[in-house]
Image (cartoon, rainbow, N blue to C red; front, side, top):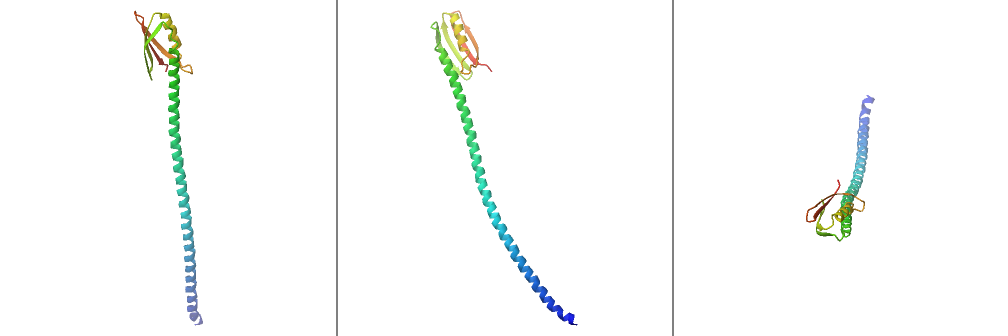
Length: 159
């Protein structure tokens, strides 16, 4: 019988122990949640900073791309300018027996019309014109001369 009377004491002790363990678990879980919330805030802050850096990198890459396109355009214009300047420099070397009456310049080539009284001078002049750029790019040269010594010359870049 003594054993039965001791059970309520053990029961109360067990209830107190369960309550103590529950309170301990509550505080442990609460601290773990607070730690996780703090950690999540730190991670969100870092993610926001990295997103800003990624945006800046993308902006820089786009700017770089636009600058490279611009540089390529400038290089192309400079090359065309150099080629056109070379053509005009060579045109200034035209012999006095050639009288140039028209000049047309476009992306397809240079087209010249004129009159000559010396077909040999025209041929020499055309040979001079066939190399027109600074890097010695050669051009296809086509010309016609009629009975009245009117001529047409077409210089087109070789592909």
